[in-house]
Length: 119
Image 1 (tube, rainbow, N blue to C red):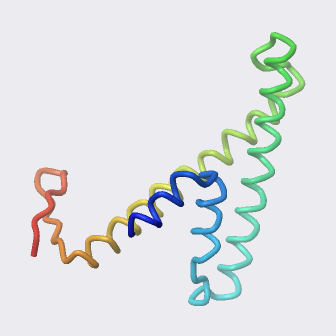
Image 2: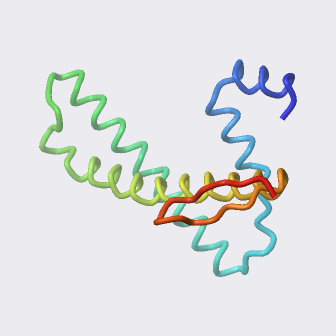
């Protein structure tokens, strides 16, 4: 990344930057069934996150942590988070791996922890 790209990334809305990066992912290697699964899981996760956040927000406005009628919504929020957090870690790992390949850095696992050495 050049200095111009860095300044753009830091001044732009992080949600917009993240969305544009995800938008550029190539899904052409997935089969039809995988794409249906991905679409369904992404849609379900987004809906769960929205419902849970809305429920928590309304509960906080009414000085309740979780209103009794919102337990199912918060459960959906937690399930969606459980799906998305590993995806974010995977994206992080793939981005780091690509960067290491670009910079020709070799990673050698040592006692469960990776150490980086220039190639």
